[in-house]
Image 1 (cartoon, rainbow, N blue to C red):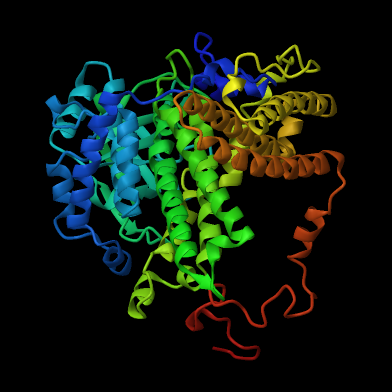
Image 2 (cartoon, rainbow, N blue to C red):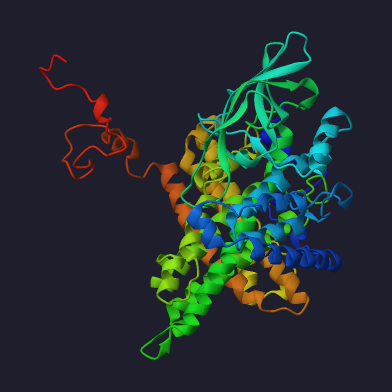
Amino acid sequence: MASARDLLSRPGSPSFLEGLYGGRLDWGLIDAFPCQDAADREAGDRALAEIARFMAEWIDPETVDATGALTAGFLDELRKRGLLKLATGVESGGWGLSQYNVFRVIAEVASRSLAVALILAIDNAIGISAYLPQLAPGPLRDFVRSRVERGAVSCTADTEPQGAANTVRRTVAVATEDGAAYLITGDKVFVGNAPIADVVIISATVTEDGTDHRRLFFVDADTPGLRVHARHEFMGIKGFPNGAFTFDRVRVPREQMLLEETWSGRMTRTANLATLLGRNHLIAAPSLAFSRLGTEWSRDFAARRSIDGRTVDEYDEIQRMLASSAADTFAIDTLTRWTVLQPDIDGPVNTAFEQLAVKNIASLAAWRVLDRSMSVLGAEGYETGPSKARRGAVAVPLERLVRDARNLRISGGVDFALDYWAGRLILPRYYPEPQVADDLYDDEDLAELSTDDLTERNVEHARHTTRQAKDLARFLLRMRAKYPAAEELLAEERIVICVNGVVNELLTMAVVLARAATLARAGHTWPQDVADVFCTDARRRIADLWAAAEAAASGQQPDHTAVCAGLAENGRPTGVLQCLRTPAHLAAPAHLAAPAEGNDQ
């Protein structure tokens, strides 16, 4: 059975991040940094212009936010214009866009409506049009192709009420007596596009010869026994169609099941690979859009607002915040270019590990930008857009974006959990036998990086990044000695999470520096200062992560277990850790309350 590491690793395709796991920075893989070719860029520009006009015509984001509903007839327009199959060939009614142009389109749409961006991202990244190129000729491919060509909306039903992190899928598919079909029974929740879907991709457990396998089934949404039993409403992303399914012996022909190699993860192999690239479209594209908007709004506000005759952007602390937001935005843009301009993990460079990392890196950077923006804008930040408009203020919808952006840190795996899952990929470098760079104690080697194209400060950042990669390997070798079995180290979740946080920061520093060098060779010197700001901020975050990891490894930390155990104890002073009265969501309805003592009724 293949492991998660086996699924992502490609011996014939070197991976920058996989090398970093072992303490080596292969600067030659990222210098020179990839660039979108001119013809593809022009095709993307035309698509962006057309879709921006379409969005302006059909979507008023404040109305969608207030009503929680998209404009009547909008979904039909998506179908008619082929926006659900942006990467599909024109012969099948699609736009024939490259993956990077699909990313650009979704970012553009997200700048106006995250709900619409997610509808497009789901269908284009993890929906039926994304699976079509992966399917072998046969009945399943014919089924999927026919639905793609008719513009069907699709969704993937995987998360169950027990939680997405569970490896087991309790939704089951049982073969009929004649073996011609399967009957699917179970429940799914948090399914994007569920209320509007024409086709549902269902993950289910199939038992064959006494062994459980996770399989994908492609099912028309009007199949008997399949129904949406709830529509979810979130803290943000109003108007986004998301719901829960119930499957009651849903009959699916055997040929509509995707057969593939079993592996140890919670998702099927094909679904996992689709989700890797999908995170760029579902999470990173909106994160980039939000970061751009937050930076632009902050810069505009700081330039037009003054305090005692001095504009806000003249103050040192404000300049620091604006610069850090610009640097975070540049970092998101850079990392997503690296992962999407060369998305084929079987290509010359394998970016599968980076595609997994981009979700947390992008969403956390966007959150930093919007949090700074909220501070810079002050009253024009926390206040809603319509409220600003009523008093004549510039009605930037920062409050709405903050609500929406918080979702990006949760969707696809909450940030700390995703750090832990990703951190597990590092350990095979050290267990059972260490396979790390053999120069962990040598001086930093920057021979493969064009240091002549970097400022002195950025060259020092590159040296520091290389040293930190070696420090990472030396730390993990220490942990291997302390925890001889990988399971022992995995039980120390804080260490694994912090290590992956360090890896994410080092990866982003490296690609930012490589891109700055590449742009400098083309005559663009402005990224040098932006890269310097990002790397300086990242080094501070790395120092904090190392401090937390070392504290967890040494045991020199508070007794969190005792505190948690104490939370359930009675006798604590009321009003300190307990509410004065039972919280409303825990109180039993009056008609269910226990009768008073002595009451015979």
